[in-house]
Image 1: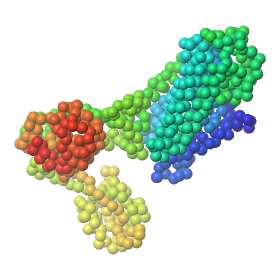
Image 2 (image 1 turned 90 degrees about the horizontal axis):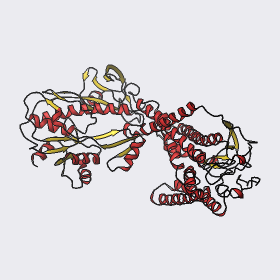
Image 3 (image 1 turned 90 degrees about the vertical axis):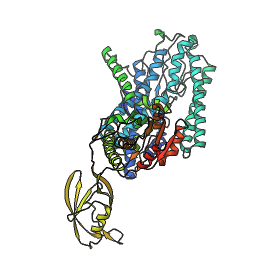
Image 4 (image 1 turned 180 degrees about the vertical axis):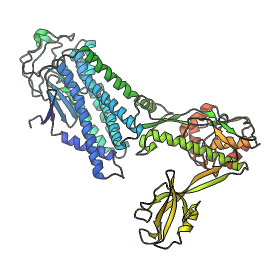
Length: 640
């Protein structure tokens, strides 16, 4: 171990070191990741292990960012002393500054470019894993690394010294202002503004956001660091003249300072190149004379003694292949699905044109408008657009598809839900119209009590068809057949699991807690089979979810009943529909109001429980009526 830290390894001849202060940020990153990845169904030790793996991936990403700087500098014949990881990130130390503005631009910009590429790779892999439902935990970690790399790239491109963006700004201004010194002063001043802005943000977070004190404190430290370094660079650039401004003022034999800076070097760049940090730990090095135009005097170039050999020149096809692949990765990353779900107003249409009913019907005199929400897993570009739009919202993907689900499974389930909702809406409508509907329900196992008699024999989702050969259609019937069974009685339950029927023998016993006996299950009801007196079909709409249930039921009722509910009007409707005619709540209130207004609807019919939310979203743009049942909806349309 040296004064520069522990040398871990060498990559391409560049030593990689860990500063003692790195331990502080390493512990903080692991703690933060463990908090983010916390799962009540996962052991704490497992969560910490996953957080450690994620932290290693994050620091490896920082190292890759720094290696981009280092290898780009070596290719331009700069002596790279090494890379150091420490409390504020990473540092690549060189012994001299870029000799032209082009070199300055490439060396500074290559780090964020590497981070953008890593973000794209992690994003594409995460999107593929999520789509196919592979290793949800690994996908979550990789997705998080993608976002961290994206954040690393964006933050480092903020145009202010000592960030990479500050060096990019200096490179751009150098030829425009005709002076590296003047360009450095502008970049340093911009860095002070950035630091003060971060200070203000930290103070705002500490005041207005609960639980943000630690984040605000860390942001304050980063802001203080940036302001201190940028201020130092400003003072140096204001008080001295660079070789770029006064070539005759440079003494090539001048001894470097402790940080490798020569007297008169305002940015500290001759002693240390900043990627995440501006302070260099290199000592020694030669000076090069550079004129104001940014060209190098070959006679003044260092001899190269004591340098690592420059990287060999690449063939042109290799260079262009690398550039093409990198560009493709970044552009691909813009469309790779991110771990969020975007919701926006979807298409609207008249449902009457999509339904076919056998037997005598009456045509609809008007339109019943279906309101939809467009749901997708967006790419980075769509995420940015959603953040800037009032009609688009973003939700964490786990909140929508479930912690262990995939988007493919989610959309498949939503299609199945839509089909089931259509059938239930048809049954409710025909029943209300006075036609006979045969409804068969099933007893569904909702939960199996641990260590109970049924534990290991029955599972959540099993359908109980019979007990000892006697059919059961309701939970009450099941309770009646099992309540009188004495402890030790073996009951044969006929169940259906994943479409396969089988018999299971369960012995009645005392339940955990010792207060009563039974099987140890809770049950609910699900719709088993519907016998409809008419054939009813619907076009393939490529729509999912249950929220078109109410509008479907109203359309079918109006078709089979002689009563004219619409009376030439255009009415938008949303809400779920149960087989007994009950109207249920739905999501996407804002998006559906926007769709209703855009469709030109004269009236909006919504679930009664959500009428206040819909009225607030409508804000007087169209009248809103809340209903609790299909019968109530028919009455509301009849009376308006």
